[in-house]
Image (cartoon, rainbow, N blue to C red; front, side):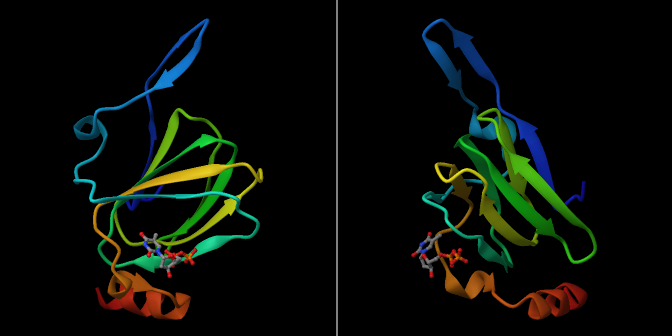
Length: 133
Ligand code: TYD
């Protein structure tokens, strides 16, 4: 796995009534969360872009989500199929998000507020930007 991202386990507690998954932000993340958004009703892949500065922590509390990540050198495909798995994106990667089950939800905790200037929406531009950064 590249140093641009990390898969983490989210602790949980289970009993006859059901399960609770939880984490203290400081135990998992080295950045503050400024924004939360979630993807749902996914019918086609999306999120095909990179961010220059944004860090993100994402998890799939229900369903199954596939996230392709590409740091410009290595490509990987990560499947989030458990409420107890989280993906931290620490450095810029080109990514693509696909809902495997229609009812899948991807919750994303982001380090910055929405800023279109932080996006790179062309893969070629991303590769060039990586070379120069
Ligand atoms: P975007 O991040 O561009 O996703 P995708 O690459 O899958 O299309 O989000 C789609 C649109 O949603 C974007 O053009 C603007 C809006 N948006 C916000 O206004 N705030 C947000 O925090 C996010 C994530 C998206």
